[in-house]
Length: 498
Image (cartoon, rainbow, N blue to C red; front, side, top):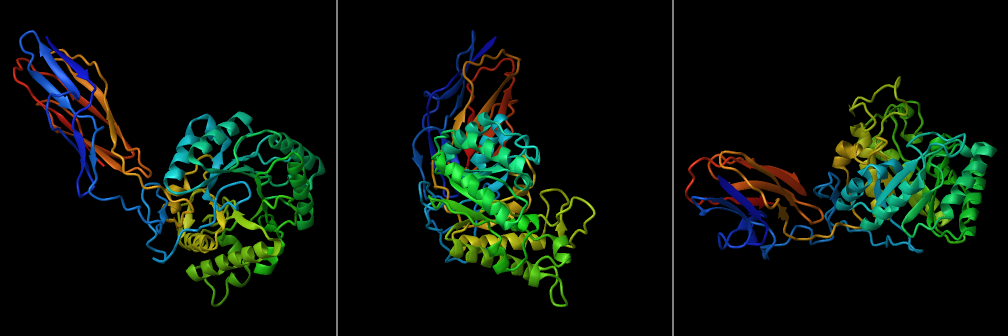
């Protein structure tokens, strides 16, 4: 009978070659390390030596994140701003709380319920690794009789968990009550204020929270001004000092599409702390455009559905936001926007350049629209949280049009250059002629993580360890059946490239 004992220790070092691959180097085989000893009553000589990746690191050159003059390509793994000017710089406005104006860049479509199933932590990790500093978390069920029901229920424990996770990543959390008609009904407005009283009376112990009292409220500017003012007065009387986002009436169809009109369609409020942000939800809808809903950018003999039209619409949004910010002395945070090309789920004509038909779909024109607007807003230190419309996870649209969105991060990822780590179980025993199988894990602690490749450089006859690659974390399965009559030592090296 053969006995295999697995010891976990330390041996070797990691060398980073000029082509940026981490290689496990064994300076002294059979010293303490991650060793497999194959023992029998007949022969004690057979040894398998695995190398752990903790050790001395010799980087030949730094990762390509040394300069802060870089951008984010939001595929959540790699970053690029090649489409923007090479002289573009990172916005310098502080994104800290306590009076300093936050410039927030992130995504919405995340629900509170994600905190209950583990998805929230994955979402925040991915956003953080890509340079985003904000997330919009929504709920919309059971607050008033007018509640939309969208994005699930409110749950204090879920929000507390969200806040705890956000603190780990220093992420801004926009809490979105995803309602619409609550403010035009007096009973619903009373219930709405009462609900928020409970939220605002709670000490969440986190400065980077932004309250979004209601998503896209229906009503006139005067009605919304009164309701928002009551909300702000209540919040400040409860000594809440978080930032607040108030929404333009455009989303409810109560505004003309020109810069001056759009600027006048923000509710008028007074905040004793001057910590109120103005939001409009910029979209370019094909069916609205066909119906003449985008002012001078609407169809004409010289105006067709193309990138020029997309830029026309984006410029009007941008001009309106600039006018409003200067007029009301408030900063901009658009809590929603994106590339959805129709306002209806069915029955609307699909644009000729549409890509996909689900909630995360887009058209080439609407993609150009949001990219052009994002670049404008970044250059003016305006914040945004784009909508993926998948309702329940941040990454629906990030897998489609979001993967080609480029932006200038306010908080670019810090370039770390740490070695990956490798782990495998200890104390394994194998019987001659029987299979030995165990899992080997490797992970990269850097932000953003690099692609790791795990493979067996020297395997004994009959051993199987398929090469496998993944970003940030990789897992492989080693399996081997010692054959009968083995009488000489063999050596195995696991290599991890990243």
